[in-house]
Amino acid sequence: MDPSKRQIKENRIIDAAIEVIASNGFHKAKMDNIAKQAGITKVTLYSYFDSKENLYFAIIYRAFQALTEVFYSTIDQNKGVSGLEGTKAIFESFFSFCENNFMYSEALLDYFSMIRSLSRDKAEDVDTSMTTQSSYFIRIQDLQNLPLKLTVKEMERGIKDGSIRSDVDCMLHTLQGWTMVVGYIKLLSASSKNESPLLNVNLKSLKELSLSLSETALAKA
Image (cartoon, rainbow, N blue to C red):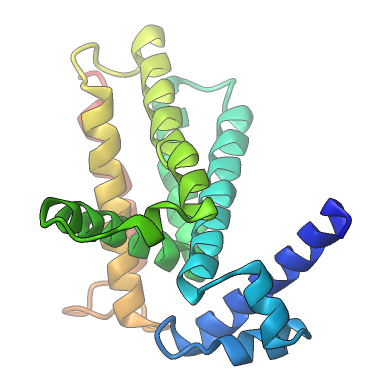
């Protein structure tokens, strides 16, 4: 088959998987239903993806691609402002990405949980080859740290232009920002469409507070 045609069909399968998993959850999603949604046979589906797990890695890879594109776009749009403002814009774009792409944000969380499990399995001499040899898993490895590096680079720009304190540990504050967003995602996931899931705290207010605290921690006094 022409490589471009194969890629088109593969993308159609991934699109179908996103719809089925978003509606049913990963564990309840069936390969039969994904094949039906994609308009192909189950045999054809397995010729592209040998397992549901490998198909989910394709979704995770898409999530990282989409997030990286958002970060690049945000950086480009904020070239004319300070590094501090650019860093805050990155965190804001990450919040918006998670709010507007719930399936992708869930996939990112699942991936980081999976990485922790793999580390534990390796330490216990459990065979992890089926996961680590997945073509999409390998692609993710090349991409997973890029959003973090882009955030660090924007903070470093802020140190150079004087808008961010010179003693800031950029990677530490980047990870703090990611932790902030991940916590927000988890609350968003737990609340579904309810904006006040815990002690009547509005999640939008929580997001604004988180952004404000991050900005204060970075800014020069």
